[in-house]
Image (cartoon, rainbow, N blue to C red; front, side):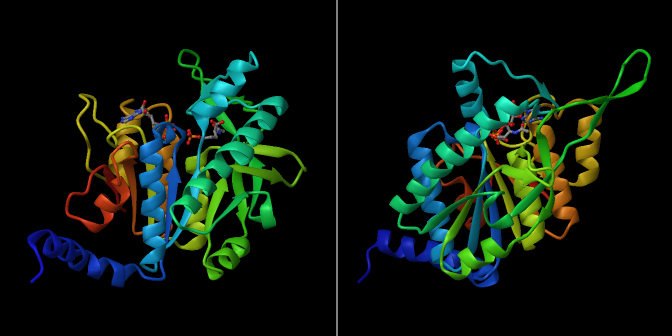
Length: 295
Ligand SMILES: Nc1ncnc2c1ncn2[C@@H]1O[C@H](COP(=O)(O)OP(=O)(O)O)[C@@H](O)[C@H]1O
Ligand SMILES: CC(=O)N[C@@H](CCC(=O)OP(=O)(O)O)C(=O)O
C-alpha cells in the first residue's frame, strides 16, 4: 500500500499532467534578472525548474540579465552609470564591460548551474550564429517646462532589429537549453548593450513562445500602496505608467510584456525570483504568484 506522502506526490504529478500535455513541444522564454540571481540556493532552484521543464517536453530558452553585476564591475573600475527609463547609458568602454560581465561571467555561471542540475545548456549571446542584429535605441525626452522634445543619446544601447532563431532551433533539436546574454552586434559592426527584458521579449516573439516569464526581485507589479497587482492588460499598464506607478526597471519589463502578448504570446508573467521554484509554482499549481499580463 502506498503511504500518504507517496500518494500526495502522485497527486501533484496528476494535477500537472494536463499542463505537460498542453505545452509539450511549446517554447517558454524565461528571463532571469540580475537581481534575482543574488541567492545561490534560489539559483539552484531556478536551474532545477528549467531542467524539469525540459524533462517534461517543454522547450525552455533562458535570457539573462546582470545589471547589478555590471554596476559592481563598473564601480570597481571607478565608472558611474546613469539610467534613462531603466536603460544604462553605455559608452564604448561600458559596452566592453557589459559584454565581459554578461557573456563571459554570468552566462557561463548559468550554464554551469544548469549542467549541475542535469541539463545540457548552450551559452550564447546575440552575436553567436547571427542570433540577434541590434540597432541603436532612439529616445526622446520632453522638457517639463518648455515641453520641447529633444533626442537623448544613450550611446551603445541597442534593441533587436532582427532575430534569426536558427541557432536556437538547432540547439533545441539537439536537446540543449539555449542561454542567451543580452549583447548583440549592429550592422555598423559595433557591440550593443541590450536591456535583458527587451532581448527576452524579442526572442519570445521570434520563437512564437507560449509563455514569457520575467524573474525579478519584487513580488510582481505593485500599485501605489505596495499591493500586488495580479492581473494586468496593456490598457492598465499604460494608465499605471502615466500615473508614475511604474518606474525604473519596471518600464522595460512591462513594455516587453505588452509587446509579447500583442505579438501572440499567450501570457507574460512578472515573477518573484527570490521565491523557491517560483516558476513551477506559477505554472503547474493553483498557487500562482506574481503579475500575469494578458492581451
Ligand atoms: N510599480 C512597480 N512595482 C514593482 N517594482 C517596481 C515598480 N516600479 C518600479 N519598480 C522597480 O523595478 C525593479 C525591477 O526592475 P529591475 O531592477 O530592472 O530588475 P531586474 O534586474 O530583475 O530586471 C524593482 O526592484 C523596483 O525597484
Ligand atoms: C541597456 C541596458 O540597460 N542594459 C542592461 C543589460 C543587463 C540587464 O538588463 O540586466 P537586468 O535584467 O538584471 O536589469 C544593463 O546594462 O544593465
